[in-house]
Length: 316
Image (tube, rainbow, N blue to C red; front, top):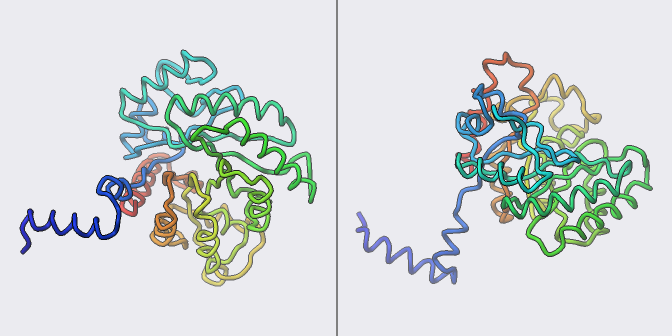
């Protein structure tokens, strides 16, 4: 048995030997916050978003923000939330504080190649709001719609440079989600990050989307390790493919609606994923995005989310 005094002395000596001051060590060991997307909160069946967060065990939530800065998935008996005015920002800030809840990231569903100027203007306003609310990540969507082929990469670099300019000098970072047809390609992501050349641009790492795109299971962990230093936010979901389809290259989106599942039932090892992120000094949250919920009766969905959040808290 070791006494409390000797334990403290031994621990202090070990920290000193590692040249890490005690406060820094404590900060390094702080658990990663865990939550879910705001569109999932209603499954808890409570009268407002914050009561739902508490019922699910969510410490934080990712808030979707429309181009007019409305927050359509947050709800309260008083009405909807909007970040378009100072009064609206104050209402949300006060409600978050009163309920002990936090926002881990904002989500923008961008259409850059259709309305670039409007997207940049909205981002500039949202970056300011993020500073007021202590939000350090904004998920962005870099997906080709009007511009196709090789021309899209050139355009995407230009668009992301514009976005980084309006966030320059702030702690806010954008997280390009590996999403849809293009951004799940590591080669595209490499060229995008290199072309933009700004630390303001990071990754919203969607853990299952690389698998959805067709990458074999055995290759996923190398992709996570490659991009973990870029990660600023996550979407946590899973897929359970038949054994003969797990480690082969599949066509994009193969049977996703059939095989998507809760985090704890899928092929991807989240213990391994969270370890990779921790080793890369990941600064963000673990955010549940369960796209399998509609396969279950409404009365079971809240419990599924609670289990997923609890699992990630254990890993965090």
